[in-house]
Amino acid sequence: MTAVGRSAGSGILRYALRRIAVMLVLLVVVSLLIFGMVEILPGDVGNLILGQYATEANVELVRERLGLDRALSTRYLDWMGGFLTGDWGDSWRLGIPIAPLIATRLYNSMVLAGVAFAFIIPVSIVAGVVSALKKDRLTDRVINGVSVVSITIPEFVSSMFLILFFSLLLPWFPSSAMVPEGAGPLTTLRYLVLPIIAISPVLIGYIARTVRASMITELGADYTRTAILKGLGQRTVIRRHVLRNALLPAITVIANQIAWLVGGLVVIENVFNYPGIGQLLLQAALVQDVPLLEAIVLILAAILMLSNLAADLVYTLLNPRVRAQVAGGAT
Amino acid sequence: MARLRTLLRSPGLTLAVLVLLGWLVIAVLWPLIAPYGPTAQTLTSRYAPPSAEHWLGTDNLGRDVLSRILAGSRSVLIVGIAATTLGVAIGTTLGLCAAFYRGRVDELLMRSLDLLMAFPIVVIASVILAMLGPSQLNLIVVIALMLAPYNARVVRSAVLSWRDRDFIAAARMRGESGAYILFRELLPNIVGTINVEFTMRLALSIFAVATLSFLGFGIQPPTPDWGLMVAEGRPFYQIAPWVVVAPAAAIASLVVAVNVLAQRLRAS
Image (cartoon, rainbow over all chains, first blue to last red; front, side, top):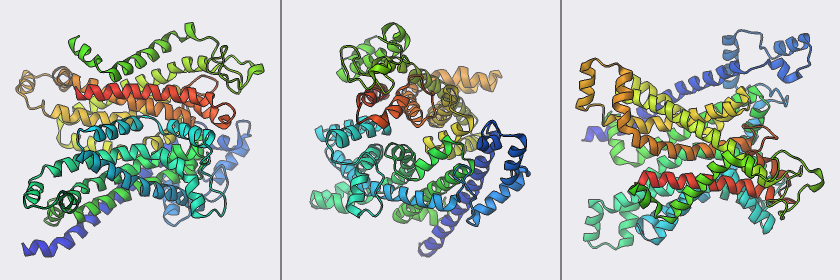
C-alpha cells in the first residue's frame, strides 16, 4: 500500500505527460485537416482577392506573392513553422497581421466567457441540487421544464426576444455588446448582461441535469444513510458528504460545455455585435479569408483540447478512486 | 392506436403534434394559403405594422411577412428532414459496423467520431460551408455529417446487446454476408431506438438549419427562410419589430414542438 502511495505523484505526472503527447499528435492531425480543406476551395485565390475580372498576369502575381505557387508540403511546413514561432501571416482581406488580431479578439471572448461562467456555474449547481432535493415535486418539475424548453430554442432566437423585451420595450440594457472605449467594469457588465443571459440556458440545463443525477445517486448511497443514522443533521450530511461527491461529475460536464460555449459565442457575438473570436470566425468564413480562418480554427482546437485535458487532470486529482487507478497504471 | 390515444391524452403533446402537423401542411400547401407572393415587393407600403391587409405587417421592401413565414416553412423542413435522414442513415451504418466488427474498426471509428464531436457544430460548419459555398444541398450534407456521430454512438450501444445472440451466430454459420447480418438481422431489432433517435436528431437539425441560415450559410436572399428573415430584420428591428418577431416565433414553435415529441417518445 505504501508503494502505491509513494508512486501516486509520479503516476499522475506520467498520465499527464502521456495525455499531453496525445493532444499534440491530435493537434497536428487537426492542422493537416484544416490545411487540407483549403485545397478543396473552389475557385482561384487570386481571383478571390482581385475579383473575377482580374487579368491572368495579376492573378499569377498574387499567387506568387502569397507563395501559393510552391509545393503543398513546403507550404504546410512553412505555415506550421510560422505558427509555432508566432508569425501567423497576414489576413488576405484585411491585410493586417493575424496574430495580434486574434489575440485581441480572443481576449474579448474570454472576458465574455469568463463572466458567463461566473454566472452559469453557481446558478446551475444550485438548480441541480435543489431539484435533486425536491425530486419529482413541483420545484423539480418547473426547473426541468424550463431547462428543456430553453435548451431547444436556438440562441439567436432567444437573443432577439431578449433584445426586444429588455432593450426595445424596456430600455434597460443596450442591444449591442460593443462596450465603449474606456468603460468601467460596471458599464461593461451592463453591456454584457443580455449576451450572457442568451448564452446561458443550454449550459445551465446540461450542468444542472448532471448535478441533479449525481446528487440523486449520492443521496441514495450507503455512506449517506450511515451519516444520517449516525445522527448528523441533513444540512451537514449534504454539505460534508453528498455535495463533495456529487459535484465531481460536474467538472467533466463543465469542460465539455466549453465546446458548446464556443459555438454559442459565434452566434451570440454576431447577434450582439461583440468584437470577439466568434465574430471574427464568421467574418473570415463568409469572405473566405483562408489564413485567418485556419489560424482561428487551430487556436480554438487547441483551447478545447487543453480545457478537456485540464478537466480530466483536476478530476483525477480530486477523485481518490481514479487517482489510485491512474497511479496503479490501470489506465 | 391505443398507444397513440394514451400519448395524445397529454395536452402538451397534443399541441406539439398539432403544431408540427400544421407546419408540415403549410410547407406543402402555402402557395394556396399565402395572401401575397413571398417575394412580391410593394415599395409604397414598407415597414407597415400588422393590419387587416398585412396580418403580420411588411418588411423593408414592403413584402408581406405572413406570406414569407408561410413560404419559409418549406426550406427549414426540407433541409431539416433531409439532413436528419441522411445523418441517421450514416450514423446507423457506422454504429452497426462499429458494434458488429468490434476491435480495430470499432476503436478507429469511435475515436474519430469523438474528435469530430469535440468541436462545436457551428465552427466546423462555418469552415466547411465557407469552402463549399452556401447552398441548400451543402447545408444538408454538413448538418448530416454533424449529426451522424451522435447517432452512431447510440446505435452502437443498442447493437452491442444483440450481436452475441444465437440468431446472429446462426446467420454467420449459414454463411450470410456481413452486410446481410447488419441490415437484415441486427437492424430490425433496433428500429425503435432509431425512431426515437430520428426525432431527437430532427430537433437538433432544425436548430442547426435555423442557426446556420441566420449566419448566412443557407438559402440566399430573396428566397424566404426563417433564419435568414431574422438576420435581415435585425438592422431595423427598432422600427419594425414584427419582421423579426414573426420568424423567431415560428422557429421557436417548431423546435419546441419537435423536442416535446422527442422527449415523450424517449420516455415511453
